Amino acid sequence: MWLGFLLSAPAGAIDRGADGEFGHRSSAHFELYQDVAIDRAGGFRGTRHFEQQILTELESAYDQLDDYLGLRPRRKIEVVIYDPRVFDQQFSGAFRFAAAGFYHGVIRIRGATVLDVRLSRVLHHELVHAALDAAAPSYSLPAWLNEGFAEWFEARSQGKRELNGTEHSMLLSAKSNGALFPLSSLSAPSFGHLNQNAAHLAYLQSYAMLEFLAKQRGERSLREFCDRLMRTHNLARALKHVYRADLKTLEARFVAELG
Ligand SMILES: [Zn+2]
Image (tube, rainbow, N blue to C red):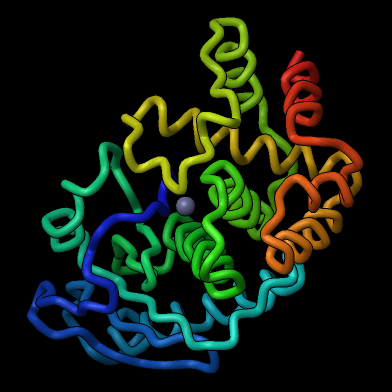
């Protein structure tokens, strides 16, 4: 569930996988490479069906992303789906928490042999990072915003709106323990340095902040905010224009509304 940060993996490298060979297939907006250990090539449980399912899911996410956040990357996005064992071997040392995928020029996913909800969510999440990067390659967003957009879109595309009870309780208890992160401390480009518990809270807070913004002026405001931010690279002005307040004020309101 906590994904997406920068690390110094060689961009674009397609390494040796489970069987040493990555299947390649493309669609209108994606180049897919996958090396999940699936025995059969054909049939309902075969690799061809799996690859087609993944591409269909990605293309559908692409359209949703345009709709919800106005992001529509022009260049094709590379997606590599690894056999879980190979992913862990290659990347587990890169972060301090369990990752299901990350984006660093290429979307890299810890795979599964079926397209389940978990895999679908990871694809949606990482697509946001890729699309934000494509829209403004020279602009390094604060992590809370980059992850917030990704978490919000991942949840929204599954039909989820607003925080659930567990999420709210966790934030409320962090607030009463004085453990909430000030957003200024979540403004580095990535959460990769955080340990598992801290990362969990950081992702949740980022998601909750985006939900909070969506509630202020409706969920369409996120689209306008994102568009303005990608064009101007000026967070303060984009917030002021869309939400009529500065970050400190919005953050204070967010914390107060937790209860
Ligand atoms: Zn992420």
